[in-house]
Length: 294
Image (cartoon, rainbow, N blue to C red):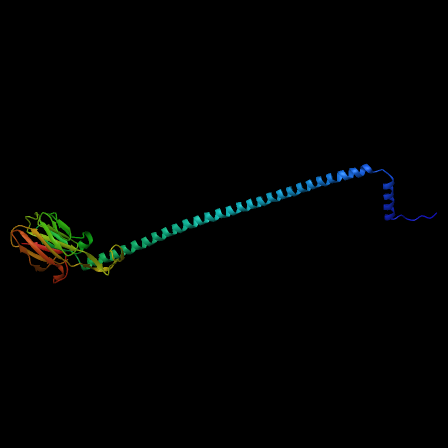
């Protein structure tokens, strides 16, 4: 008897004949046909669940990364803001220090220039003393240093009458009819008497005065250059009237050293002196001081 090795095809063919000829395994086929879709459904649901879970985990990871990056960026921006604020305060403090330094240097410069001008004025323009019995009044250096008008020292000096502006000022003894510019006009007795009884009176016609080379803006509100000595006085014309005792009165222009420079005309109308001053016409230069005496 001769045997041969079965092949896959022969085995498959045999099994097919047995399937047609025998009823065994019918339930298994039905079970397989029912279980397979259920298995595939469960596997599909599980796979979809895994995909959704992985997606959720991936989304959570992305959100965490974004949040972490935002926290880091916010911290970075906060640090930048802190540094910027510190830099701003540093710049502000630096500007304050710079202004303080500039003001300190400017004040030192002004003080040094003041000392130089003060010493020069004291050397070149020493005070004079015009002697009146019991009275001394100084003009010259003391005018520039202590008082913008006139420093009167001694005893028995009367309270001066002052008129500011251009015209139309009427006081008890002084009447200013006109002035070509803004000026201060003052009269003061220097013999210990009132103006109505005095025999020696100082008249002050103080116009605008600036340093040589002083520069301002057009509205004269901002000073660009303080200038230098000598001081320049604006010339002007004054028409005034002073009530004085009866007598023969004379008017003199005084220098800053107190000396009488020249005699000026004056009219006496029954105890009221009519004065017409033109400082531009003075022979020896502008002066704010004039002497009335009899």
